Length: 230
Picture (cartoon, one colour):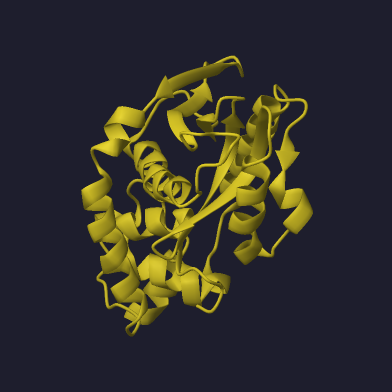
């Protein structure tokens, strides 16, 4: 909790499913268990994401420079995004209201307009994916406002599109712009963020196991919670 941020995108999404799982993600992540088939899906997702990133041959991978020094991602991202000319950033970091998000692809055009892509190896758009884009938009839109206009971009950096990019069924890409949808959700997101921060400042929540343990995904902390019930 001393890293300059309290929540991340994945922990926020976890909290929407179960606040206890979010708490464990922050304080007891070693308790998580992922079966082999889930780990295989993660690997497939990374391959699909890399294939899309390869369409930006001159992209800069922030994660390759900083690795696990997460608190430095927003600083380096701010420096890179203000450089003149068109650029693409991979795993660019943004921080607002103690929430850190890493965007899969940030494509900045020469005029300062920015397109962001969240890449999912899925053939359908789920509510979870929309929530994923929404928390990113909430953080990134506010973070960009904090970057002062310069001679390069007299009107500042403008978030132009926020695409959810998913699989067309043949490992090709379909994109859907969710910018207007997620902009309307920002007020509710801020309330949820503040609530989750309060949850993380207290003792581990007591939650009964129920349908939420498997919806929308099987919780990696089910084994831990089952042991507590005995």
